[in-house]
Length: 147
Image (tube, rainbow, N blue to C red; front, side, top):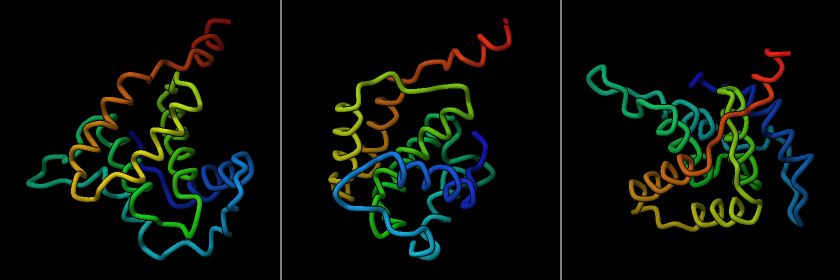
């Protein structure tokens, strides 16, 4: 998984969440985000200890990223929406997608947000299991190459 930059979150994920996901609570302007929290969320999947990656696989990186963006509240509002669009952005970059209905995805995001902080490891493992269950190849790139 390539690193996702703050600029990419602002220009892609944040914009899409703000424009496409309509809820009663609007997402405030990107400049109102809490300093340093988003940067920490984006860097954590690439941490090492003793030259060994703490999150060595695409799924493990994606899982901790989604968890942190949901739980650490880098934004005043819209954290689940921005976390979800960042997840989609990372999946698309790897030619993958989630094949799951909207209600299941919504329930999943809410469950993560409401999970107890002291259950972080268990919740991250559940995110990994969820992603492994629903990730599918994104066929449109393959189709374009064959035609």
